[in-house]
Structures are given as C-alpha cells and as structure tokens.
Length: 164
Image 1 (spheres, rainbow, N blue to C red):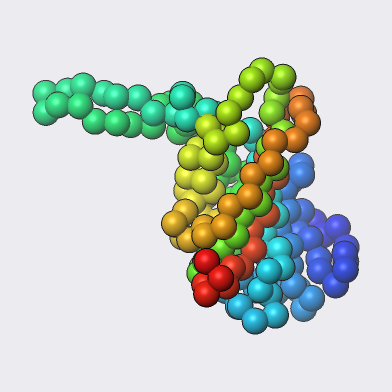
Image 2: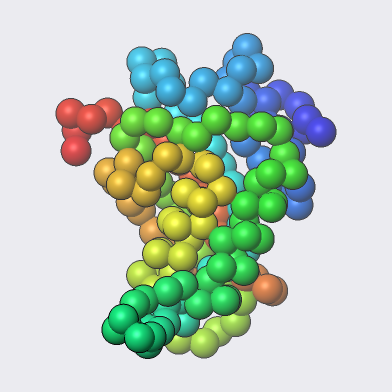
C-alpha cells in the first residue's frame, strides 16, 4: 500500500494514480497550520469531470421548476467518492485551503477551462476531502496535455487566512 519515503513524507497509494501525502511521522496532519502551512496536504488524481454545460438540468413539476444535477454529474460524484473510499480513511480538511488543479482533457476538443470546476469541486466535497468548497480561498488551474480518458490532478494546501 505504501510507496516509500519521498523527502520525509510517505505517500499512501489509493489506487491508480491516487494517493494522500503523509507527514514525516506517518500521521496525516490535516488541520495543523504552523509547519504544514503551504505544504501539500492531499494530492489526488481523479477522472476528468463533465462540463458544467452537462451538469445541471431544469425540471418542471406542479410546483414550478427546480434545478437538479444530471445523471452524468451524479455518476461522476459517486465515482470520485468510490475511488477515495477505497483508500485509507481520511478526515475532511478544515480551514482555508489553496487548490492547484492540472487538467488533462481526454481529447483535443475545444474546452473552456472553467467549465470543469463546479463538478470537480462538488465531487471532492461529496467525497469528504474537505467540509465545504467555500474553504478554497486560492485556486490555480492549468490546462495540460491530452491524456487518454482524461484525468485531473488536484493538490490541496493549508492556506493562511490572513493572506487571502
């Protein structure tokens, strides 16, 4: 399950390309600030999310309309939650967070970089990575090269509340 030490940290392997970085003593220090400030708390590799254009649908009923997450979006959330549940138990991150995202689209189609954010952030919250996506106070997103089937690499760091 463990890949070994990497500059005083241990990575817990959660499956293909999915891991959580552990602190020097082997404990996942998720809520401490001080020495963990700015260091990677969690690094995840998850499937490429559906576009926001296919994430919501309006449903009409007797009492008017409401907006719901489409089946594709619900499947994505469930898939990410199952991937993360396969690994070691992890408490949700607390406090302000900085998130770095590398998007590797599944093909060369033209895509807006921001259309993937809502599905990805909601899926990570639903999977229990953090308590609420409003904890993210800094967000960096980068479109990278095409990977077959697509993937997203997410790094979460503790963020100093005063710097935001």
